[in-house]
Structure formats: C-alpha cells, structure tokens
Amino acid sequence: MVDFWVLGVAAFGAGLVDAVVGGGGLIQLPTMFTVFPNMAPATLIGTNKLASIFGTSVAAVSYARRVAIAWSVATPAAMAALVFAFLGAYTVTHVSADFMRTALPIVLVLVAIYTFAKKDFGSVHAPIHTGAKEQSLALVVGAVIGFYDGFFGPGTGSFLVFLFVRVFGFDFLGASAVAKIVNVACNFAGLVWFGYAGHLIWQLGLTMAVCQIAGSVIGSRLAMKHGSGFVRKLFLVVVSVLIVKTGHDAWLRW
Image (tube, rainbow, N blue to C red; front, top):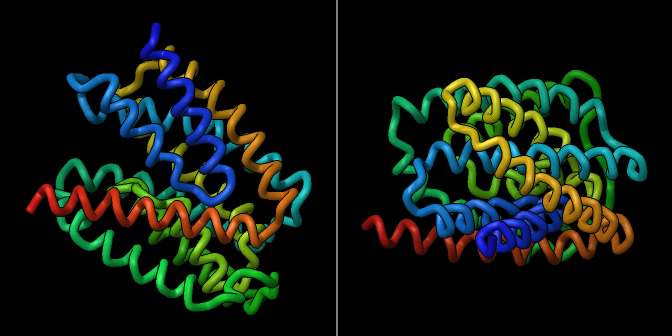
C-alpha cells in the first residue's frame, strides 16, 4: 500500500513538472524502478508511458483552451513524432542506446549555457517562420525528437520546449503548449509498441494516470498564470537536474 502512495506522489509531481516544461520522467520512472527493482525495464517503461499519456493529454487540452496554439507547427511536428517515436522504439530493440548516455549530458550542458547566456531567450513570442518553411522545420523537429523519445527518451519535453523557442521564435509559454501536443504523439507511439509487446501493467498505469492528471492541471495553470518567465526558470532547473542525473548515469557506466 505504501508503494502505491509513493508512486502516486511521484506521478503527481511528474505531471506537474511535465505540464510546464517536460522532464517529468525524471521523477516518475526512477521511482518506479526503485519500487519494482525486479520487474522487467520494458514493462516499467511501458506502464510509465500509459500514465504519462493521460497527464500530457490533459495538459495539452488545458493549454489549448487558454493559449493560442501554433497549429501550423504543432500538427506536422506531432505527425512526424508519432511515426518516428515508433521507429525509435523499434530500433532500440535492435541497437544499443549506450552512446546516448554519454552524449546526453554534454548536449544538455550546451542547452543550459545557451539559455543562461541569452537573458531574453523565450521572453517574447515572435514567430520567425511561416508557410512551407515553418511546416518543413516542424516535420524535422518532430521526427528527430520523436525518434529520440522512442529510442532513449530522457528530457524529451525539455528538448521540445528549447527547440520551439530557438528554431521558431516562440516564447516559453507558447513553446510549452506546442510541446505538449507533440509529447502526446510520442507517448501514444511508445504505448502502442509496448502494448503490442505485452509490457503494460494496466491497473498500475491507470492508477498513476489519475495522479498525473491532477499534477498536470495544476502545472498548466501555474504556467499560464505566471507566464514565460516562470516557465524559463523551471526549464533551467529541470535541465540542470537532467545534467546531474544523466552525467551520473554516464559516469557509472564508465
């Protein structure tokens, strides 16, 4: 019974953080591995996807009701992410993802340095692309991050937020809103793959989903209430934690 309370609290925290800047997997997935150390990793990852898709979907709906979603970017990016996240999940069953564990902390450090250095980064919503170029870039971002999510995964939401600010000129709030749409597609693709492979614990996943939804509602409201400045600060916190976590994991493997 205590384990379910621990997982519920973790799912709530993951939903809250994920709704703002992504990175909720930092909270939820390690907790699941701690509570169920002998369970197959694929089963825990699949169950995590089941819980996460509910929280992310609720956050996406919350943003869509109150923030102007850039659907010209969100739609092609989500479609590409759906296809490539599935391909990534398939690929990781045939190719080792160990090299990603070494490269990820380095990439995250660069992201953090860039965001710290650019004090006005993501403070103003000023889209810089339109038409075919915007949609083509959205397809590329969706494909790359979608594949990464299916193949490896940590920090997917944070990478999406960063790229939507950097590549498209969105503010952090607008970028977070679009990121949720794409994240839903990524989670759905992964859920289909793990469900097909039989790596789902439905009761656990759905129970955690309730807590995820509660956290997502609060997180999305906080983001919309406090705006891009708040999202930027939390983004830097999450990326910093990601650097420590992934750097530690890479060090252990060395």
